[in-house]
Length: 580
Image 1 (cartoon, rainbow, N blue to C red):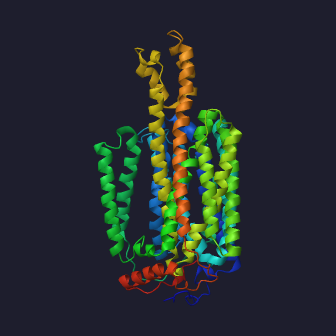
Image 2: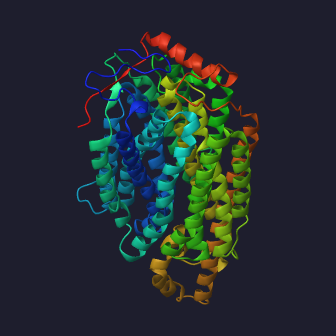
Image 3: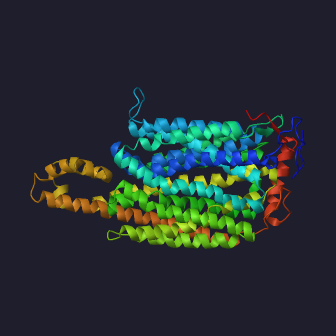
């Protein structure tokens, strides 16, 4: 059974919907509810766990692997987005979506038990990193398919309005998640920050199982791009390992250079695979469009800048300003509120005016200013000043977040919705993945360099200097061993005064390292700001009909035609395999 470009497949004999855009009102509402519950699951995990991370790495002695907890999550989620976006185009979305939700719940339970599961290799931090990688795989499935399905349900001109519904869910988790995560960490245990995902995840799976329609392509022979999958993974893994190990071994070490060389070689192999694959997971011909190119650059750079700010703000608050986990969670709330408000406003204005370029430029300008303000924070910065700077970053990021997926979906034929949406999620995720690794390496390297260069002579000349200074490699552990440190330093003249000097050195070292991270992030966002002056602006389509042949969409149309000719397959129709 075939479906022409922009058209619909015939109704199935039993009267079920033949496409997402032909769902009745009840099925549409329940589908949206199911998507929102699943998105709530992923959003709660990000906001709750982020606040608890300083306590987690302190208990598991993992400061040297601080960035890897996030890097592992982002690595697998980044890889999963294009792979499962393409697979859902080929085999339908429901069961991949349900599998992602089920895997997320399972991984959450394992993350909460990290270090307490008998018989598993590695310490608690190693186990947590591995389970977060599994959780990231599930998150990539959820995130990639959610925004693809939104594109299936609504034409571009209406899509912006519905972004508000999903931004509201994300905002709900963003507002209550940090405070809840901080309260759980201080009053129960950081482990319950993962266990809280279980009831939300089970509820989401039940709603999806009974309400989400199983609409899938008709039985047409498909060819999975296994070589593309393998080379993509082969590129990302050594790249992230190199960026993580550069702190310990340096940029000129044979280990780091070798891994970077492997990443470059595998990138070339991936590009070759995608240029020859019948159904590539990331069609290169998409990038004939200047709109897709500018959007991809912007998503990559803002992804890096976003994680350069949000990932390290709780560390600054708790280690420099001296607030508790609960307070740091509460202070993040204004940032998330402004981000949510900006996203809703951006979606509404885009749908109402049909214009997006000015919003992209304005949002990136505001975000750059906010990150410069964060980079100027110092030892005397108060928590309220930090909150004000975060709010500036939040409103700028909120204005930008919903735009690029919408405008890329608008620029390609409806039949390319899956791969186009996956490409936007991919570049945002890969930017965040590279950003967290690079900024984590920069932060650790500069912290240790500054701390070591400002050590008092009495400490460096002490017989047990190595043992004493080892405790300061992880500043987040200092509060738990303060009594022991006081006993050690009391053994030599002016010891307690020297200890106070070292503790000030810890704070100053973190200020210096985090300031560099924020300012580098500001530079990256500023580059994205300049790039958006070259962003084409085309009218948002008001239906699912084919896009007009403008310069912005010509490359996408050509990509679709090329892919169809290569595979010699008809455009897939959609059929319904029962709602269960």
